[in-house]
Length: 245
Image 1: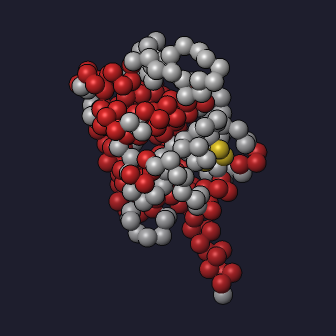
Image 2: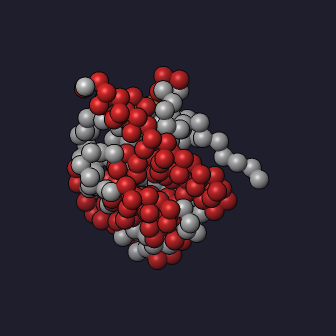
Image 3: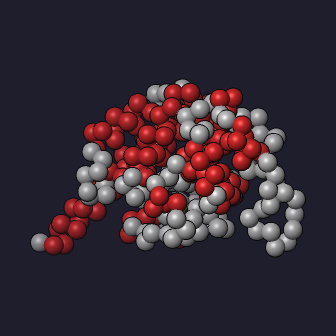
């Protein structure tokens, strides 16, 4: 079976791969355009109505936001109006799901102001291509997957998410078929975002599109990134404690 390669695992220095991978750049553009659409309160609410729903169950106004042609974000050089979701994509559910998750972000993450980077995120990540996620928001060149984001939420230090609870959610999530995964995602993403950790929605879109065919690869990446990130944070804490002695 063909496998998906992801070299952007925890601990890779950003200097080795400073640019967002080409494979993620179209997904970054989609995220950027959805974020722009969400500045319109009506369109944001329409997109929220797609949360955890298959495409055929979302209301007409959600389809309208995602499928009507609109000018590109950078209209300085002209170009045709394009829909947020490409017409030629056969499986549109990942796009609808990610758009709904973006629309449902906490208010603090929906503002244009970008919060300061955590030290560990700055050290281990790279800027998204172009405008990226909220401009200066940083993620790994090959994507910061949901497993790593969940681990970072656990290690925030305020006990907002208990490690056992996060691990249980991860184990439950990776056992799901695609329908079960879509049902779980809103609560997991809300949990992570509620701690102040930003989700890499472009990476999530890639993984959702890959899930039906490459589920085992995605599952392995999520679990490896989760445990590797937890381990790295424990070692960081030990080193800090030793220095304070």
